[in-house]
Length: 234
Image 1: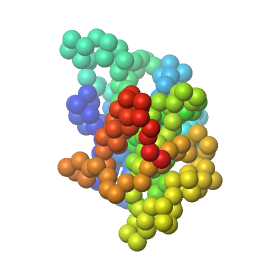
Image 2 (image 1 turned 90 degrees about the vertical axis):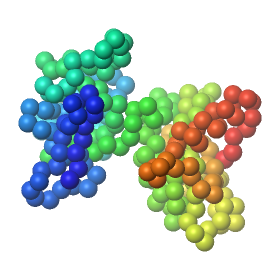
Image 3 (image 1 turned 180 degrees about the vertical axis):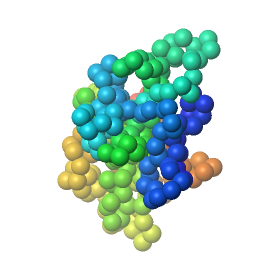
Image 4 (image 1 turned 30 degrees about the vertical axis):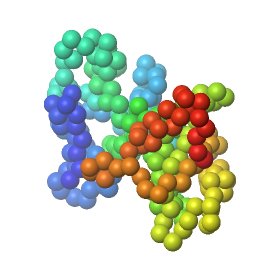
């Protein structure tokens, strides 16, 4: 059964009920006395996007924002880290909210799904782009196997989207598809600001001990290239 928690939430905040069907990818429901709400990822003071009530609405993936948690189990603060505490603990509606740094959305039954980490957010001409969403969209292409997406600095748009892609067995880069063709496919299947400006084909992805693709490692290599004045691939 799925659940959710952080060290700052002592440590469990939600769990899927032990009876009835569960929902794949969802984090269950808050424990008694606990609460969660979706706030704008870049403007907490604007108020909730979705608080689980029908009156406010805001349900569904199109209303993605930062998952914020409240309840008596939330920590009092960070010892000796006042700035970090002020950034991550805020008041709204008479409650003290922990800004988790996780990006997600809520369905009409109060179940929440994580989409990404806030620190992975890419800002393209003021638009918020979540790497996981672009990875999933590119993953729908019949030749694509694995995808990693990250942001890189861009003079015109602030940041740009870059994707690293491996192809399924039997397909070969430049023989069966090149980066321009895949970028064109992306532009036809997602919003302009989400489509990658660069797509680099890789033989294999760097992964962690748990098998998770390491976006940061790929991103760091290109950031170092840009700092040294070198061109990036894609």
